[in-house]
Length: 194
Ligand code: GRF
Image 1: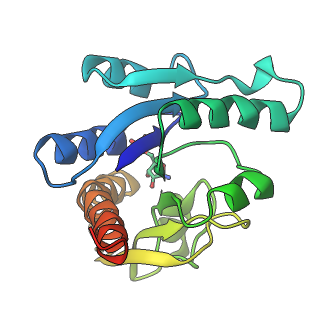
Image 2: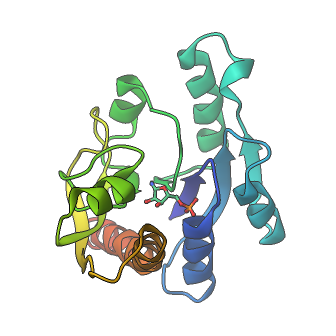
């Protein structure tokens, strides 16, 4: 199974997934990183791990359709079968999502449908909720939405600061995302009779 990771930032999930593949915890090949931010740390992390980086900057294209066409060209030339969003800060069009229906996974740092959006950890912390969590789901046409694959809850402790909660959420993400990817790949293999 050929994977592409889409990321725009730090890349800690990218590294966790790449490590899981190296340790044979995920039976797949990480073929490419698609990134829209040339200076993002994830670019250097991918290069250090020998993963090919395809940089696609939104500002280089007038229309979103052309930006996505460049991404699709990359996906096709590397025969990508599963797309892993890991902090990719661009919304994908409904056309793109339909083309890859059930083949785009995303991780979100809350128990969806609670706390959608880019500040999910802070929003959960500020809300005074007793718990939050991490969700991995297939992507559909709505933001932070689509069929759930795995979710795990985490208690917000009275001693937590925003920083300590963020750390615990990210640690959980690094375990949950590889497990969810493995689950999807195993299901695909057994339904294909392989
Ligand atoms: C993660 O918190 C993920 O849940 C969200 O974006 C963040 C990416 O972090 N979608 P990193 O770049 O993998 O460190």
